[in-house]
Amino acid sequence: MSSPTAPEAQNESELHRLVLLDDLKNGGAVRILRASPGLRILRVDHADVANDQRNLLDLAMKDAAIRSVLVDLANHAFVAYMLKDGVTSFVRRSYIKNLWHQVRDGRFQVDRHGLVYRLDEPLAGLVARHLIVVFSSMAGKIRTSSLMRHFEQNFSTIQKYLPAGTAVLRVADFGGVVGGYYMNSYGAPDTEQHVQGLIAEIATRLGIGHDDVVLYGASKGGSAALFHGVLGRYPVVVADPIVADEHYIKVFKDSHFTVGVFPEDKKEKFSRLSSSVDVKGLPPVAILCSRQSPQFPYITSVIEEPLRSHIGLFDSHHVDIKTHPDVSPKTLNLAVTLLNMQFYKLPIPAGMHVIDEVKHRKDTGSRAL
Image (cartoon, rainbow, N blue to C red; front, top):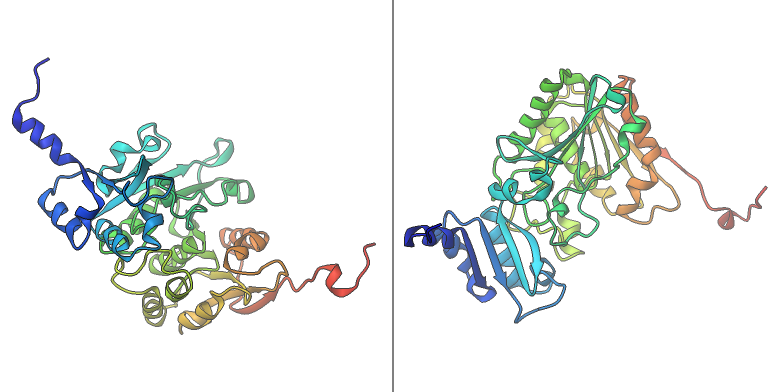
């Protein structure tokens, strides 16, 4: 076999590139990516800053300059996928299908717009009659180098608790640095249109009517299910959706990497959506929440009329809910109930409903039987 010609070697060097972290600071990322529009893999050497198990996502939490680099890369559709020997590697989003082994071995699929998804056919070989779309929350290890931080597999056994003939669609969330809430970002400006299109396409492929599609998610996934459910007029069940970025920006130093990545704050986005929606004929919306979660004030204020009057809000006073991540697991029983009510088209009452007002026996002085 002959050796590659000079032009071929040059092309290869333009597809894969190793740079120093300092080369990307102060707008360097933008200059490099503009100079190499065909770049697929960008490896960033930060060994002089950290040559341990910390990747650039970890380092960005304490360094504004590194955070700016990550935002620039995300806004040019580059996603961190690997850490090795002090080098964090990034892949262009359009090239993920060629790199990610779960796609290459067929576990995940890719649609014509590059959305990565997983479709589970109904159990027991039944014909599909219903479709549930499960949107991913933030990953348990939110800053892991693995691409799976964009595709958390929440409620993996959900099919067992839903009507016979229910298929499950899960979609990866590759907007942003750690996730894009399945909404438009600077680096993925057509996400909302593409997600809506994929849902409709899968339903059509399975022969499922629009009214037999239900959207579900918790936290970030709840934000997505609520947004896309109202946008696409699908029945919705969500747990403690994040409808404003403020809390995570102020309290957690923007741990969700939303600043500079999205054209508008979710508070503005959900306020605009809820105040402009025509609720006539809109399928039921059920939100599981808790006044013990810091998201509760946002849920009850950001969602405006007329949508607010159309929503069933289920405020859990479960004693073991201490903060936001507790809401979904402690209300899962009602989530399953509400999902089945949506599929069986049973009415879900609008308004605020208090649930799970229980205490531990030790807090009441009660004795065990």
